[in-house]
Amino acid sequence: MRRVGLRSWDMAGNGLLQQGTEQLGITLAELGALRHLGMAGVCLRDRGAQVLGAALRLATEMEHLDLKDNMLSVDGVARLCPSLPRGLRFLDLSQNTLAAQGTAALAAALPLLEALQVLCVAECRIGSEGAGMLARALPPRLERLDVHGNDLGPDGAFCLCDSMVLLGALQDVDLGGNQLNDTGALVLAAALSSLPSITALRIASNGIGLLGVQALAGTMPAAVSLQVVDVAENPLDDAGASALFEILPQLPMLRWLNLSGTGFGPGGGTCLLEMLDVLALGGLEYLDVSYNRLGHGWLDIMREAVACKSGRPCDIRCNVTL
Image (cartoon, rainbow, N blue to C red; front, side):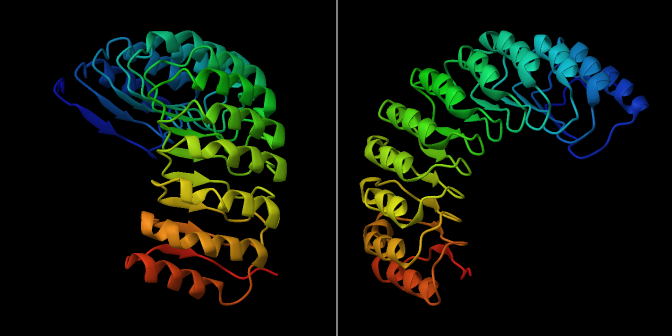
């Protein structure tokens, strides 16, 4: 039966055997009107990528393609990328192996994807070399970029930040888990002043310390639209955390703040508590201060401070660590 009118098909998590992969290609070739294809975790592997690539050449109306976690190697990615539909608005290749060669194939395809708004390539082994190739090809309408967990390092951060400032629509950036360290944080801080439309900044697990967070605190207020800030698992300690806390009232749109595992204790907690009055009035909805060096009672103190000022509930996560 021909199903030419189907617009959305999500088969996430359904492992495809060899026979299923071949049948997939036949079926997709009949779905010329398909706009949304969800295939996360279906074990495509490289053969499936080849079959899918052939079918995608006929998918002229496709806008959303999710291929996260499909065991694709560099070869599979390289075969797939030339066939990506030009009308794509969403593309997720996370948790597949791009490395330098696969990133080069993706970078060659990206200039043709002028409508692309969301690009997710988290945990793809891109590295600093791949970051340079990716940065030079980012589509102009991009709104969300997720490059989490790619070992970009400071050099990769420099390449991406140099290009991000040219993307006027960019709103959501995830650079977490990329070994940016303080050097990369300095690069990012310089870029923030040119990203007034950014609403979410995720830089967890990057080894950012006092020097890096001080630089970020110096330019973060220029990003007046920030609603989400994630600095979890960075060694800020009391001094670094306090430097960040002091500028939070200058972020009037802040709604979601993750400070988990940043190493601050009662000293930083006292500084945060002083800022909670303003944050609560501004509409803070989520605060995670778990896995720090706060003692007993801090959860109740913070909840009371927020409730007294805002009259609204706030999801505050706090625990006692040894």
